[in-house]
Image (cartoon, rainbow, N blue to C red; front, top):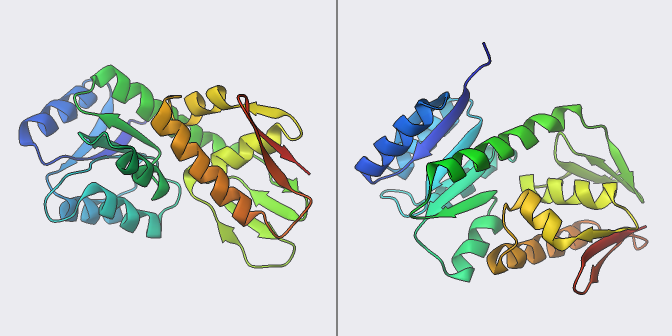
Length: 227
């Protein structure tokens, strides 16, 4: 029998939390439920979860703060935000601090399950991916690190690592913007596109030591990594 996907659900609305927990458990998930951010952080440090599903607005510690603290210990665990917020700045902030996806309330259980499965599957695939070279850099995709020659390792976030992986695999070719947004963000809407632009800017800075490497914005199509 396959091992169940282990999820931490942090949701302060008691009724909603129980509904989501029970719905996931009927679909062969194992779920721990936390009613506030502090309890969620304690559980996250004690257990080996496959993914975290975090409400943004919670007592004691909000979802964004919780995610920041989790990322100090684990750069790879998938994080999905549940939020009633719809402002561009809020969505971009969620991605920038290390979130992998978000769902606006109200949401369907089917969509949540698909997004969890996609993120968990991508994480498991990392274990079988070889080291990649780009210019003077060595990119360790499974460990999400980047190293220039003999310099210190630079840690990448989950989304930075996946975005760089696809750019390198399509080196000197245009990486279709809509395709990669749907693959990594599960959406190609305005909020996701803004978030992707932020991550591209971060990657440019982390690759800046090798002047032969460029990430070019091909207007109307996507991005191209050249070396």
